[in-house]
Image (cartoon, rainbow, N blue to C red; front, top):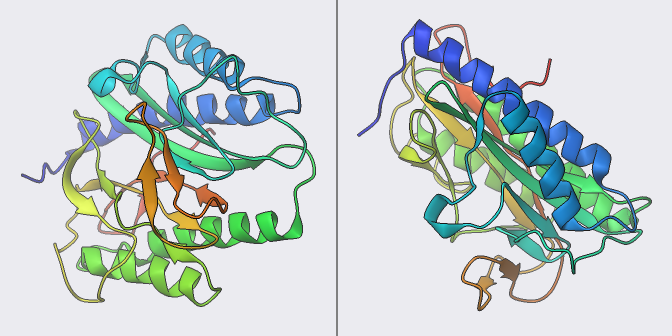
Length: 250
């Protein structure tokens, strides 16, 4: 069931989104050679809890940390660890959610650790730009397929592939709500976008094959061919005047 939010609920989501976005920004500032992913997770948790919010991911389905931190060929759901030490040239995808006053904000960004290769930067740029193109397509009256097809066309034109096994989703009082928001699809197909809908658009784009595999920890998801992956995400609201990004730090 898709839950449409009223203006009061959207205001709460905007506040939760601001906390989540600021936590993500702090995580990005902590991405440096020699830093562990556990240290970055601690930065995220400390900030979110300091704002009177709760990390959305902590304990969610048994997830043991406050942020998903995924390095290089890890697509999503990387578990922070003291054993994972960042090095120059890594690309680091950080996914952060915050729950405040009963509503969630969910966002992600892939950060460069020091100087990265031209190939890594190109993947990051294409993934980020596909997100903003998809947000522009998320107008009231459009359909879910318009969002996914926008991402797919943009990245496949640049010889990247779209992860099929994981998709975006509705966000609200629950971290994951209806509808599902794939990063692939057919224009004009799928659920119609209505004012009051709040969704997370999150392209997960691979340098090589779209195929992924989940490691033995049952969380960490990696590219099947070991090549790089990038991940960007915003929570947005569908409004009569166009899409509005709810996960803004300022």
